[in-house]
Length: 380
Image 1 (tube, helix red, strand yellow):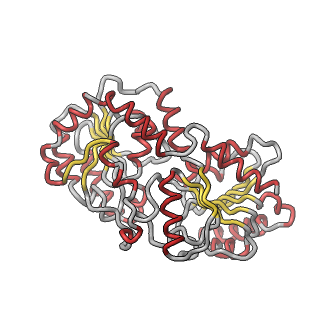
Image 2 (tube, one colour; image 1 turned 45 degrees about the vertical axis):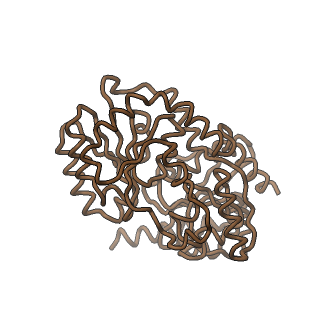
Image 3 (cartoon, rainbow, N blue to C red; image 1 turned 180 degrees about the vertical axis):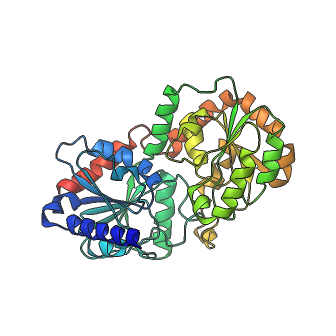
């Protein structure tokens, strides 16, 4: 009880500090993160913004373990809120409130008439109309689009449903740039071993719900070093199943469970990624220029009406151009497919690089594009 009371008192103090008159300049650009892992999305933009010596901002997080609370860049003011989060959004008076959270106006975060502009940053390359709720982006004023598919999909929805037009900016995806840059400099820690990374999505589409036992059993017959990396939502929503699977994985020699998701090292170490419907496929394929082995689990379908847009989602459209897709019933025979992809990985390099240039805005300077826009808003 005292722990809860202490936490509330700290939030009250933070609330008062955040809304102090002398903090108003630092509220002009405010970032909001639901969990520590989303700092990976914000960080490239913050790095560019902070090149301007006059720039300051606030960073709100709902994760008490978010490292930014104890280790943050100068001129970035972090605040933790949980119990008071709704009150924060009811009263905030920012020029731009920047978030990676979809479903604005349908969950606990609702627009108010004091904040001038609500800005959405994608933390995934995936399309807007299959893996997200139908109205996920309708309420935003401005969206930092990753590629042409996002603009096409959002504009078509606006036309189809007579929605207000949003400011759709051609920004790109700095996370891929960071993965590409770090991968090129990375020295493998296990150069004598072939590493296979299993990184599924969550929900009914997850490989952890469909076929994980058959996949693990097949890979046990190989000499590969296997890393199993759960999605944070799987850890949160299926804690019991996650613990059981963790115990099973850790009991297999040369298999490892990796749930420290703030590190991207396993992406650089992996010689092959095995996934299902996860957006990590694009980050790995475009960032390392290595192919992906997809398992055909059910669609990650959070919008039952996605076909009404009459646009094929990008994750379905490019699936067979990023690697090879395998039906669930072929999992027991998957090892020769794995071996073939590993043997011919270098042959995918040109194709994946070309796709990256074609499908993503501003390769290698997306963060600068986004930062320039926010800086202009900050100075307005």
